[in-house]
Length: 405
Image (cartoon, rainbow, N blue to C red; front, side):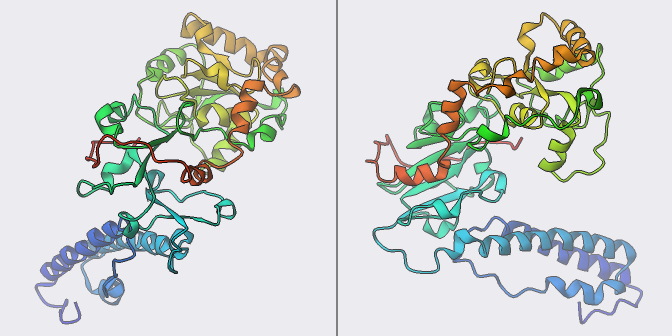
């Protein structure tokens, strides 16, 4: 670029050549974000050279390069953030032989880990550095998006234990139901109540947060809202909602049947603030499966709203109190449900029956589930290192097709 002259007749050609060259930076740095191995040395690069010559390019080429730069910079930022994270700095010294090592091969949807660092046992180290893939005692794989991280098959060293981690319903990721694939893993960490490590959507802190009374009065609250964007529809929720909305007005802030706009979207905080403004919240799961009770149900309760629920057949065992949600199975049709909701939105006495549970002790069955989450799932995984290893039928794993929800 420094040797180019962009003021001649071939300015457009040279600008386009620079666009093609800069595309390589976009590709390279986007890939960089997935290199979770500290043995990789980042080569010297000229990513920022664009700003020295960008005004010499044609307008179209300049705009294209700037967009490519933004993508490349985000990849670089993501890599450096990982490289400087606690989960890497912890291993800057030699690992003592008595210390056990857990490698988290890929985090959930590439999100940061929320493990309470101060509670990790002194003789246990958790890392995301894949240079320890062959030597770690445990390797945790987040299965739903694992295929995005694998370039080739993995070999499983003798004695190493593999953990299958997923909070997604198997109805949406059928390979999770494939016995041949799943038998590679020694332990399962999921929302299933019979998993080796139960990792649910409810948290230990909910024992106090759930009983807080709503901040808004009945007359200040709006009626019904929903926020559904995922295209997954194994539960048939789209068809049910389409009919339901013929009989009752629902404010939809998600991509599905969108008719309202969230003025400021800052993630979870914005969603919770929105839910606090409504009497009812549509809490329809994307699949109907035992134990698959997600944040859709609990976010509504935490916000002081009443969830209208479709999903897990055993939802009652996950409810913190009696009569704390509207179960659509109690209604013969969407039209009958709509008639009840219309009346409940007008009648404060009917609505308040759904809040009475907050004045009473939480259900013992639910409290037992909550108490089991006193220790974070990954801390419980550390404790598993002291158990004798289970027998694995064979070693090796194959890539499986998976699509992000």
